[in-house]
Length: 185
Image (tube, rainbow, N blue to C red; front, side):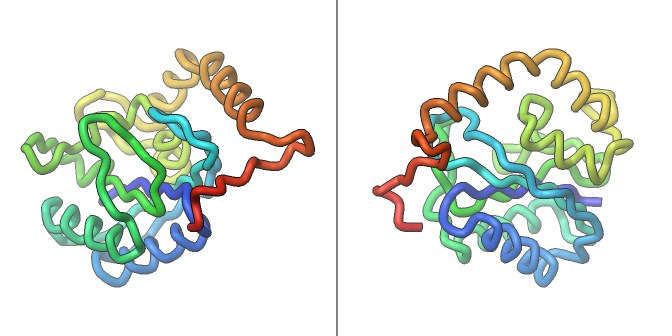
């Protein structure tokens, strides 16, 4: 089973996720599992635009490298202009990350599986734990539910603080999100 993480914080975020799932189903394989969509503040950069995140499980016989090429093409077709580089993140209409694939461990210049940052990202662990709680992470040596629980134990107070700061700095007095006038998506 292939597991992917989807995220969007520009435009009609929910429609972007639906479009990505449809295109993945058409081009990569049968989408056999979908998590709930969760809303999170941006991680790794500051933005007034919150993310919608989702994890999906896909049955496919394609190689991981082919899946990577296809997901990058899907991102471009939906409207993503550029990938993040050197840990510098920006708002994006769609982001599709390969998380895990049949227990494979791959570490090349092009692709690393399992995703090297997934155990540090709540927006990945929470949705993935919904659809694959018992899936074993071959590098961490734990199942996904345990990884999610460990994340919460270590980072819950920090998560609550970041969330409160984001909400305080990105809400108007009527408690609605501030509009980003620079963003027409």
